[in-house]
Image 1 (cartoon, rainbow, N blue to C red):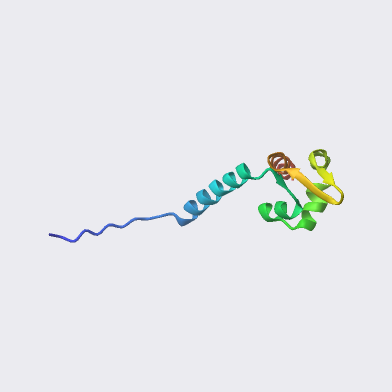
Image 2 (cartoon, helix red, strand yellow):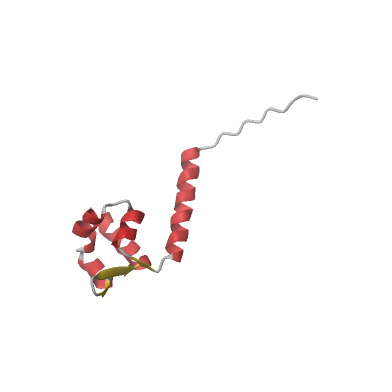
Length: 89
């Protein structure tokens, strides 16, 4: 019997992108509210940059919820608004 030689070529970058996309979708499904730190983590932008470029935008202020000094944003709406703002850059 001849030994079988099977070679599988995998595109690691494509697999990684697919997994990250699926994880992002799942995270968005679970999150209801996000704060500035979570937003910074998910967007890979610094809190300072988010504050100066995104959070000060009228569209983000419109969906902002405050209690004392703490601020939150509905996760789905925030992601949509961020996508809209960044597409205008």
